[in-house]
Length: 247
Image 1 (cartoon, one colour):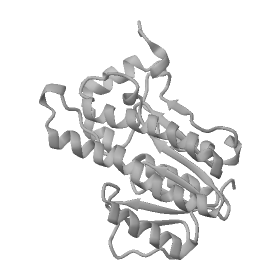
Image 2 (image 1 turned 45 degrees about the horizontal axis):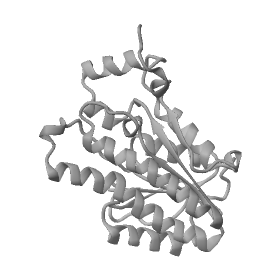
Image 3 (image 1 turned 180 degrees about the vertical axis):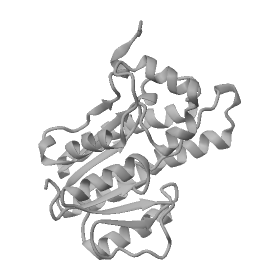
Image 4 (image 1 turned 90 degrees about the horizontal axis):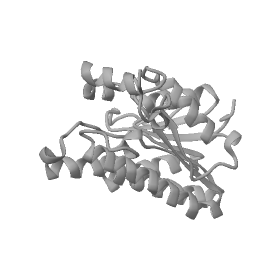
């Protein structure tokens, strides 16, 4: 029970990687606010377990309402995971400004806004741990990922800057860079040809289960990782290490 009596906040916490992380944290004792744009508007932060709260991470006013509700109900936030994100494969020459801008608004600006707001509260209450969700697409020039890859590369660098600046107030910040994962978002983005290509160039020749990403996130949030900050951890079946895959 690594998170007994802890308060966690997971953006994008009602689906995919975010839901798996929220569920894993609850299994280890936490109460988790699942800040998600799909959450019902009328739900309030009452009880324990996973508590949905409608939030648009690209909207500062929505984030302010989230933080106010969390402070009013719990008085603190111990752990943050920024998993809210969108993705789409778009050829560089066909990527429209609005599409590029929206991808950065949700994936990068949303991470910045939520992490800044939560870190201010963590600094006030004695510290905490933050895990951001990047991607291997933020470290490689994958086809069709001009917008998505740029946003996730920004998340990785932002996380390292946060780690350096926030260490003095007791806040650790690390970034997870998943490879291919079996999520609803990936199901929309990966057709059979893309799935076959990912499986071929990933040394473990498969996609991750969301619970495998959640296990890494819980490690980085927990005291087991008490001297780890500013790290970008690839949970990718060896994709970034693979180079040329001959078979």
